[in-house]
Image 1 (tube, rainbow, N blue to C red):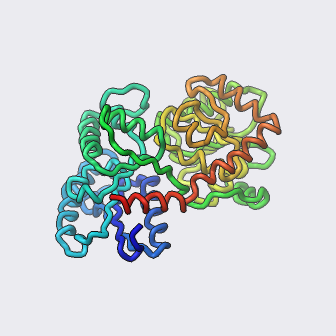
Image 2: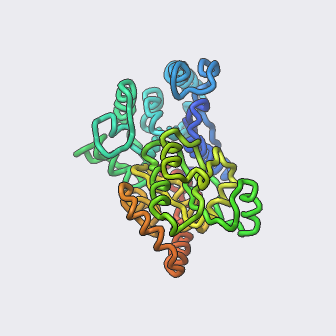
Image 3: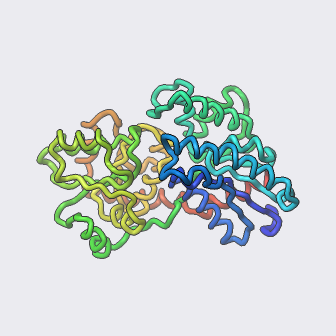
Length: 383
C-alpha cells in the first residue's frame, strides 16, 4: 500500500438536496474514516444551485432543476478541476460512492476510479426483470440504462454484498469475466445495546410504555420494504399478543394508514419520523423483535444495526437478508403472513431468543469500520 501521504482520495458524493440519507452517511463514513488515518480526502458533489429554488428535488419541477445541477453543472466543474495540476497527481484515487452516479465516470480517469454498487434493483426493473419491487418511469428507464452503461464500462467495481455482485454480473457483464470486489458495508454510526433503564427514559417521552412490548421496523416507506406485513401479522395474532408496532423512518403512507384502520390497530401503532440516533439505539435495544420483511434489498443496514443492539431479528427468507444476518435470524416468506406469525411466536422460546441475540452480536462484528476501510485502501493500491 502506498504511504498515507502519497495517496489522495476524492469521493464523489451525492447531491445534498436529494436527501438520500444512507448514501450521504456512506460517503461521510469513508471521509471520516480515511481522515482519521491522516489520509488526504476530499468530497466532490454537485452544487445546489437551480435545485435551491424548491424544497425537494425528488419529484416535480424541482427534480428537473436538480438534474441541471447534477448532470450539466457538476460535470463541467469536474472537467475544470481535473485541469488543475493538483488533481493530476498519480496518487489520486477517485471513488464514486453511489452507483447511481456512475455517469460521472465519463469525466473521470477510468483506471483510477472506483464505483461502489449498492444494488441493481432499479436497473433490473428498467430492464423488465420481475421481483425487484421497484417502479421506474419512462424517463427512469432511460436514466437506469445510462447508469448501467457506465457501470459496464467501469474497470473497478465494488459491490456491498455477494447477492448484489451476482446481480450486477447478470445484468452488466453476462458471460464476460469481470473482477467485482465484494466489500460489505460497515456500520455508518456506532450501534450498541443501551441499558434498559436508560433506554426507557428516552422511550417514555415517545409514549412507549414498559408494560407494553413493541415490535420495530426501521426504514423507508417504499413498497418493497413491505411494512404492511407488520400490520397483517399483528392482526393475525389477535389476542395472542397485545403489544405495539413502531415504525421508525419515513412517515406512514395512505395505503398503510388505511390498512391500520381496517385492522382496527390505530391505537397500537407509533410512527417516528427521522428519529435521532440515541432514539434508534433505545428502540433497537428494547424492542421485543426487529421485523424486516423486505421483498428486495441490496444490503439492509437495519438488520445489522438491530443485531448489534441485541434485538432478535425476523426477516425475509431472501437474499441478501440471509447473507447479511449470517443466517442468525428467523426467516419467513415475505408474501406469507402466517409464516411471519409462526416465527414471531417462536420467540417465546427463551433459549431460542437468547441464542439469536448472542449469535447476532457475533455476526454484527463482521461489519466494523476498520476491515471495510482496509479493504478499500487495498483496492486503491491496486488500481
